[in-house]
Amino acid sequence: MAYNVLIVDDSLPMRSVIKKTVTASGFNVGKFFDACNGKEALGILKQEWLDLVLTDYNMPDMNGLELITLMKADEILKTIPVVVISTEGSQQRVKEFMEKGAADYVKKPFTPE
Image (cartoon, rainbow, N blue to C red):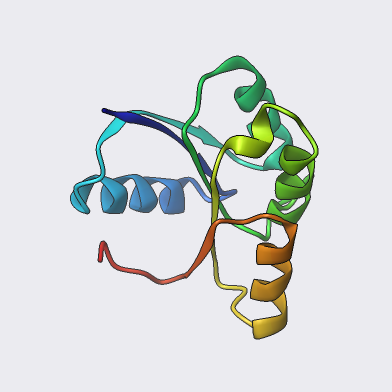
């Protein structure tokens, strides 16, 4: 089964790196979608069937934590797992991501493993 993945990051080069890394890891991707912030991501989430969201924290207009909060408040979107990929790696920040409903956290920079 192939999974549709939404990558949310304000950096186009970082979105490309994440796509390449996910592909290189062997994860079975059906289609990638990408957004430059949480607000754009919500629009895509309401239009497309997605199985996984990979989001940065620091973004303009709507950050990753705000995106997770809004997704978890929605009956349909709350079932989609969200993994935060960010340089924000303090214990307090990671705890906050997890308390808001993130499935996991990956610190930038990262490797396919």
